[in-house]
Amino acid sequence: MTYRTHFNSYINFCNAINCAPLLVSSKNVCRYAAFLARSCAVSTVRQYLNIIRILHMEFGLGNPLTSWELKTILGGIRRHKGDQGNQKLPLLPEHLYKLHGTFNLSNLLDLQQWAACLCAFFGLLRVSNVTVKSQSEPGHSLCRKDFSVMGKGGILRIAKSKTNQYGHPPHTVVLPYIAGSALCPITTLLKFLGAQLAAPDTPLFSYTDEKGNLSVLTQSLFRRRLIQALKDIGLSSATYNTHSLRRGGATWLMSVGTPLAMVKAMGDWKSDAVYEYIKPSTAMKLDVVTSAVQKL
Image 1 (cartoon, rainbow, N blue to C red):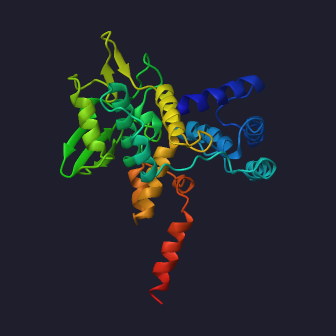
Image 2: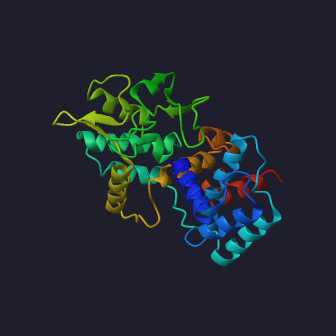
Image 3: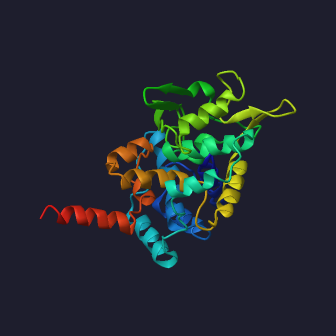
């Protein structure tokens, strides 16, 4: 969906200024960047510009985003608007324990939401991995056949995602089994799946409602219910949202000593964007310094 949004934005701009989208001049790339900057932060401008690079690569053409002019324009946008953005804080295990108390797990809707939250956290999943855009547009939703239990945990096989538009090779997500814990994603997901029998191709986070209709977890429903649960435990949607689960999982893994390269692989990051997700806390920094001092 992000690809389509960026693509349509760029094509509409090209049509508006009557220029070809391929073999685009540095001048027109800069014009597009300035156009985007009217309403976007510099980080978002870079994301939208990236579609130009992708299109040119698909046709075997050079990358038009390497010009000195564009670098200067982006620098100016950054100085004028700043690039701090509105990054949400990570949700950590201590938050998850509190969130658990807001759900009635005998209710299928609550169980669906909680299972998706735990999978998103421990699997470092994007919201688009565990939800669909709408009930009528399932897209590349995970299906029941994409989940399996093995060894000390479970496996989710994600065929297509934001960084894998064509489905090759699939991204494998490992979920831990945490015996006796309210935060165990395997126990929670199995409980949800076991509540109703369904075909292997059925969306993973779905169930049949009282009217016999298939109810799939949508992005809007997932977001709305999480925001309400956050509010119930005293956290504001101004500082936490659905993306806080993925960011929280990455931050937690780093806090327990997981190498950054492993976190990047587990979260399916293809670029250095992972650095934007992981902000070491003061306690984490202090642990590192204390450990280093002991080796003096």
